Structures are given as C-alpha cells and as structure tokens.
Length: 251
Ligand code: MG
Image (cartoon, rainbow, N blue to C red; front, top):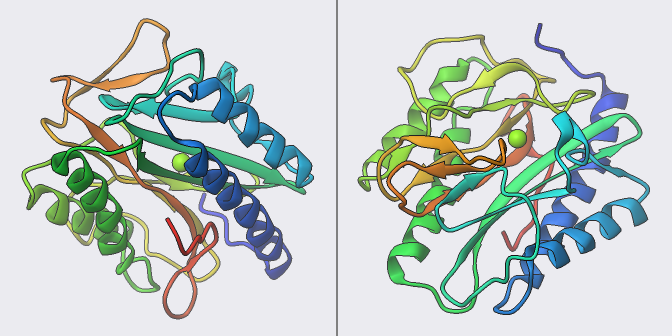
C-alpha cells in the first residue's frame, strides 16, 4: 500500500531530507585523491548523528556502514573501507538519515580530481535523467511515466539503464511501495497522488545495462566493467511541481 503522508509527517520528512542532503554534501566535499572511502563514511556518520538523526543504512540488512560509496564500475552498495581514491575516479555516494521516525535518501556521483570527458558526461547525463524523470512526478501521471522518461533520455546517449535495482517509496520505512523502475512503457503502475513521498534514483552505465553482485554480497558492479553513475533525491508529490526533500543547490 502506498502511504500518503500527513502534513506533520511531511514536515519531519523535510527535516530528515535536509540532514540527508547535508550528509551527501559533506561526502562530496571530501572526495579528492588520497582520501579513503572509510574516512568519508566516518564524516557522514558524524554529520548525521550530530544532527540528531541516525544513519538509515547502518545495519540495514546487515550493511556495515553509514554511506554506500561505489567507485568507477561499482553501481551501488559499495562498502566503505581502506580503498584510496585516485584522480580520475568517479565516486557515487548514497546516504540515508532517519530523523524522528522518518527517512531521507539521496545519492550523487562526483569526480575525484580531474576526470575524463566521458566520465563527466556520464555523471551529467545521469543527473539530468533524474530531472527528465521527475517532470512526470506530478499528480495525474503514473509511476512508469517517470522511468520511461529516464530511460528515453539516458538511452539517447547510448547508455545502459540498470534494471535490477529501482527507486522506491520512502517514509517511516527506508523502502516503501511503490517500486519506481528507471525504465518501461509509459502509463503503467499506480497513479501519483499528493502526499506520496518517493525516491527516484537512476543508475546509468556507460556500457550495457547488466550488473552483478560481488562476493561480498553487497557491491553491485557493471557486467562489462564500464563506469556507472547514480543520482537520487527523495521527493514529495504536490499539487504542482514535486518538492525535492533532499535538495542541494550545488549537487
Ligand atoms: Mg534509495
């Protein structure tokens, strides 16, 4: 069942979203050659807890960290550790924070030092595919209208749209119905309604759409070793344009 949030719940989600977006900004600002993914995770944890929230991902399904940090061919669910970032890497950071019972969830891919034009283009197209998708995150459209727009845009650049992982409702649970694929035919799935809160999160590969999970049972990588990028925000469906709950003007 898709949960319509009350105005009180929406207010808490705004606060959770603000903290979550702040944590993503903290991570982004730390990305530079020589930094380890574990150092970034520690600062994300510190920021979220200092804000009076708890990291949504820590312990979720047994995940061992506060942020998912996925580098280059890693799509999502990268586990922070001793890995040192190098110039030319692209770094996807996914964070979640729970504040007074409600979650925010957002992600972004950022360049480490100077990156190839191909890598920068993948990052920008992935980000823009989110904004193409959320043009349809409005009352009256259906869930698949969002993913259809994401797919059309990203595939127009010859990129692969990941099928195996999808966006989702977000609220008192980190993952709530409905699922929000980043692909598909328009006009399918539940109708969007005011008060729904959803996380839209295109995962776009420079090569093919296929992915697999590493032996650590978490980290998803591209099947062909190509680069991958991710962009996500939590949204509120309103009477007009969607409100981005994890908004940051620099990301
Ligand atoms: Mg998510």
